[in-house]
Amino acid sequence: MTQAPTPTTAGPFPQRVFSGIQPSGGLTLGNYLGALKRFAQAQDAGIETIYCIVDLHAITVWQDPEKLRRATRELACGFIASGIDPARSILFNQSQVSAHAELGWVFNCVARMGWLNRMTQFKDKAGKHAENASVGLFCYPDLMAADILAYHATHVPVGDDQKQHLELTRDIALKFNHDFGVEFFPIVEPVIEGAATRVMSLRDGTKKMSKSDPSDQSRINLTDDADTIAKKLRKAKTDPEPLPETAEGLKDRPEARNLVNIYAALSDQTVDQVMAEVGGQQFGTFKPRLADLAVAKLSPISAEMSRLMQDPAEIDRILGQGAARADAIARPILQKTYDIVGMIRSR
Ligand code: AMP
Ligand code: TRP
Image (cartoon, rainbow, N blue to C red; front, side, top):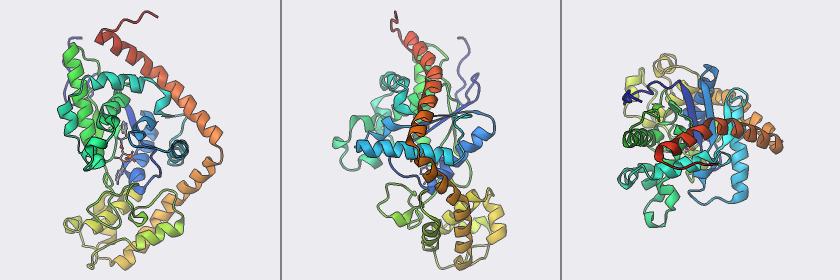
């Protein structure tokens, strides 16, 4: 090909959305607002959407096999309950499509040690015991690049914490294209938008809401019942001042800002619109209002998840069908990659 890749766009590639979530147990409000809700919006906008339960990523840290199977099915239910329609989107688990692992190996040979050494998520997850972390955890971002590029996906909706991994995905695509003199892999666009790209802990407005936080009070789980959701929001840490009149006044008030952001994302409003509605209110007034909204939006999702979990065979069937459709897209892209790299394929 003669055209040079444009570094900031997906270039000549048609629009295709890909994203993934790890089945490492439990979905939080952060996953819902930062990821799932926006996955459904992309699907409903009529864009081609591919969503993957990344079980190969999950095993970069130890997983109990039975729990992993359960978490995979539960996550599939979470996707569907959040509005992902397996007929309109491709929904599957990663290990059923071997192109991910195969392309991941090629990218292990493209990415540089120095690039991976800079990944903050590895440093956070490996902590002080990096020598004891699995090699898989270190090269996790190469597999993530393979997930996306095996489909020539162009747009990747994620929460803010995945930005650095997507930059690495772009670097891998650029280096591959450059090293082999091709314009084969698209330069993906991260889609990190809206009021809830980083939902914070309910106990500490400077920490991300996370399923791995030891305190269950710090997060809202998609499986929490209405009472629990309301209680957690009413008890959420705040400062003693009432809400400011404008968004500007939230600047140095992380807990207040977080609750307003959650309200905005749940009600599909901008932060400015929310401030026009609730600016100046005491938390004693605002929190019950937020709790009502959260319960109204989340309870149907949690109810639908439990309903879907009753039929594991049906979930497995959906994942299998999704995997077959995913494989049909990824396999030819992998074959072409092998051709470009110089592998003989004679069967
Ligand atoms: P994970 O559960 O770490 O596999 O994350 C799955 C998706 O949810 C990714 O797109 C994350 O960026 C997103 N996500 C996770 N936690 C949060 C959060 N607290 N706020 C916003 N997005 C989040
Ligand atoms: N690393 C992502 C996370 O922890 C999950 C993930 C794996 C992913 N492969 C992906 C996200 C591909 C987007 C695209 O949240």
